Every structure is written in C-alpha cells, then in structure tokens.
Length: 560
Image 1 (tube, rainbow, N blue to C red):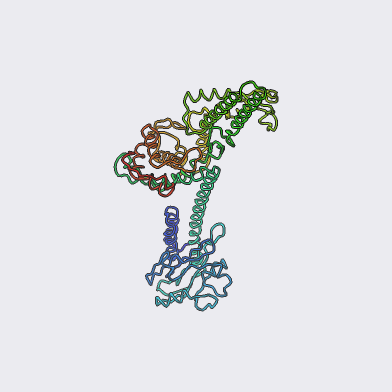
Image 2 (spheres, rainbow, N blue to C red; image 1 turned 135 degrees about the horizontal axis):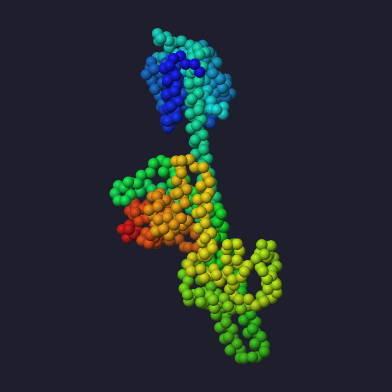
C-alpha cells in the first residue's frame, strides 16, 4: 500500500498498535474510521456493523463540517437495524445494502444521480442538517475467512481549498487497505467471543452431564458456582480483618467461575451406585432383599419343623406353637436389626458388630447352584466352583470371595459393619479418586495464562486447613482464598441438598451447626466462615435454592 506521506504511514502504524493494545473494540473502529477519513480527506464517515451476515446496523457516524458524531445506539433513531434477508429481493437498496449483497466497492461521484440506490437515509440527513452529500465511497469489510463484518462509507472528500472532489482510484485503494484492519480486529473479537462461548458451553455441558449421571446430585455442579460467587463477593467487600486486602480482578472471577463449574468433572469416572449409595448393601440394587429372602427361608424352615413335630407328636401343641412363635419373633428381631444397620444414619458400636457376627453365623441350606447364570468375569473370581455348584449349608450373612471384585469389597457382613454412613473404605477411596481425576483432566486442558489457576481452585475443594484433606494434604497457609472458598461452597451445597438418598434434608440451623464444628476442628477456614455467617451468604443462597421448610430461624451470633 502506498501512502502519500510519512504522516499517513505514522497514522497507520499507530492504528496497528492501538488494535493490539486497546480492548474497547468500538473505540478502535472509531479511530480506524477517523484515520481513514483523514487519509482520503473525507468530510464524514459511517460504519455499519454486520452481525452474522443478517443484521446491518449503523454504529458510528461523524461529520467534520457539521461537527456531528453519533455512536452506538444513538444511531438507531436515524437508522434502525436492517434485517438483510428481507432486503435481498427488493429492487432498490441502499448503498450499504448493495455493498453487502454485491460484495463489491461502490464509488459514486454523485449519489443522487444514480437512481438504482435507495438514498432516503442521505436525503433525510441532508435535509435535517442543511448538508449536501455528493461523493460516497462505500465498501464491505471482510474477515480472512471471507465473511462480511462491516460496511465502511466515506463522504465528500475535500481538496486543499475545501471543495468536494471525487474518490480517486489511489485514494480508494488506500482507504480500503486502511479499513481492512477493522476486519482483522472484528474477526479476532468474534473468534474470542466464539471460543469463550464454546468454552462456557463445554463447561456447562460437562457439568450437566455429571449432574445428570446421578438423579440425586442433579444440581450440585450448577449450584456450587452460585455459593462460590456469593462468598467471594462478600469476602471482597470486607474492609477490616484478615480479608480486608483480598481483591479479585476480572480474570480471578472468571477463573473461580470455571473452577466451580468443573470442580467435580472427575466424577465421570465414579460409578453411579457409589455416588448414589443410599444403603450399606447397595451396589446396583439394595441387596437387603437377598438377606430378607434368607430370613423368609428360615421362617419357612421353622414352620416346616413345627409341622413335622406336630405330626410326630413330639410335644404338646401348645409347647410346639410357643417354640415356633419364639423362633419367628427372634428372626423378625434379627432382621429388623440388620435392616437398621443397613441405613447409614446408624452409628455402629462394638456391641452392634458383635450382634451382626452372631446373626451372620445362623445357618441355612442352599440347594441351587451358585455357578449358574454367571458372567465369565464372575466365574473367574471363584477359585473352587465345585463348592458353589453343590448344595451346601451357608451362613446368613456372608463375605465370599466372589464379593471381592477389582478394588471393591461387596461382602455383606463387611459392608454392614461400616462404622457410619453407607460407604466402605474401598468405595471412599474411589470417591476420593474423583478429585485426582479432576486435576488430571483439567491439567490436560490448554487453559490460557489468565486461567492458569483453574486447576488449583478446582482441585482444592476437598482440602482442609489443618492439612488432613485430600488429595495433597494442603494446610490453610498453602491454600489461596479462592481455594478455601471452593471448599466451603462444596460443603454447604452438599449439606443443604434435599435430593440425597443417603440422608434426610437438614434444617438450615443444623447445617450451620455442622459447619461451625468444621470451623472449630480445622476443616474450613475460620475467616471465610465468619464472612459466610456475618454476610448472610447462607441466607442469600437458601432463599433461592433450598426448600422453604428447611429454612428455620437463625441468629447469626449463635454460629460465629
């Protein structure tokens, strides 16, 4: 591109620097249009934005001699947005519309002499401002992929004496070349926005897929970001205490947003029956029914034994009846105890375990083969199939070798003896593994530098400030404030959730009492907990996302 003088070249270089450093794209477009107008000595210029090659809207207009400048929505009053597909078959179009549809440059030395154009915009402008639009240079602005992102127009070039002249071929070439920078700028803007939207959509799709995997945690990944944002906002607003200097810039907020959405992405590898394990004997289904059937067999055996003794007249009917009733009552008592142990709310004691051991040794006779109807994988776990193939006497509760599958132990007695909750040691390790998988998954994503802390924030939501958390055993001094925010957000959502099969919904007062204990025993950060309570973050979330019957009267001072 040839420029008329060094000043013109300097102007173009300045535009290039501005396009690289200025984040306000509308301001850069204005500067480019103004500079191009200087290069071609135009008295005025207009820029139409083309959105998705469907909508044409005037976003910038300036005129030197009239001293008029209109930007953005100010132009809608004079030039409403045009839906281009509706204009395609109209016989007469405006110059800007014609440029779009023909994808060509229009250089007219007298626009009113050309009856092919709809010049109502210029005629209305001229009448309103006592102006005369004569020469117009109009051309589409393309991206590198050939999409039109704008239409640039320049009006009435002036010579040294202020007289209107025409746009020469050289001026046209130079002006188009200068404005091509707008195409690069808007293309980069669109790409950044598109990639940002793609990233956001990918994050939400992944989070929703994790939630959809379990009908009982269907909103966890969507609600943790809400709590994290509320708590971070309250922390930033602190003007005294340990958090008075805590600040977050735009990158920090976006990083926390992404991290909170993706904090559980590793759960895609955690089996649903573990995530949703509502009882101790649950795998794909609740195996309490198998044990209940064994009790049914024992009761039937007791009845058969009673009837045999009656037929043989071994004892009086009254004594035999009493013996039968006593056996049935004991079976019912034993089954009730096992059923209670199967629920995670019961905290097991040594006495409870001893009772389970006693019940587990009650014998019954199995007549049908355990080896039929098994998959090859199940058969491979049995070293002595002949033991399971033939009828045998078995115990009421069992820990068999075929209960050991991969890293899991599905032994009935083993699971019923879980001290508290429903998850056994191996299942707990598998659940904890999700955070390691989360970290590995996020490390594999090429986050830009400004989002480099996504892995740190998301990967620390199970850490404790006393160093007893996982996976890295970080202490409070080793954790950033956003990481500690993530930990509190994850805990609060889980405690307030009313859709978990392994626990009944808790009142807000119960949740805050639990969190107060967590603060006291070194689980969560005490400074953030204080902000959580004093700033009523818990209430702002509860009023929108938990059941009204869970919200009871709270005196914040009771929980500080």
